[in-house]
Length: 201
Image 1 (spheres, rainbow, N blue to C red):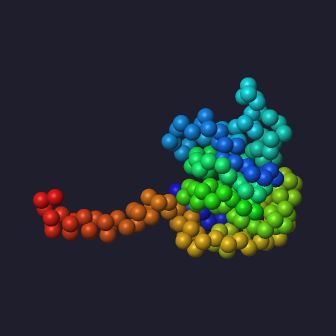
Image 2: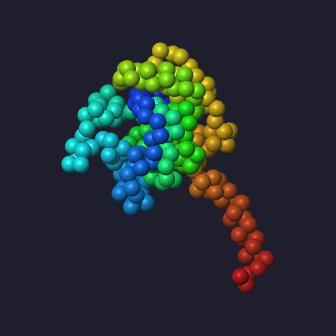
Image 3: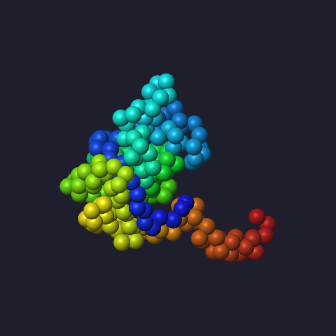
């Protein structure tokens, strides 16, 4: 998992509420266990017609938002099934942060485990950032994990809360496997001692 410290980039406004994981990555794309390659199918049914043509009005198809790194979303983002492919698809597209008033619990947890920072802010602050994002590619928003702030393109700063352990993992690029590997010397020492004590095992 890549380290997350700070991102400054284009924010795509998605004011819909209850954007569920099937909207984020439809079920027909869940056959893979690879974390890459899903970005092209992110929001597939919203981005493309049945013939595969882009839908021009969808925000991520608009020229100003094709390189978006942040999503400003409506309430209850990531609800629905618990598919881990949803954060995989977001990350593969280039999204590293989602800001909303609330997230579904499982999706929220999966984001941290896959290098995406989900930020919860009060509605009035999300509304202000949404309005800022609607200005297009020139309105670049900054997210500072270390300082725990989101700064709009006009310099307005909003503080957010994040669990200290999750912050540590994000800033050091540690997923569950990475956390385990940090204990590798202790694990190796234990296994060696166990073999010495019970060589017949």
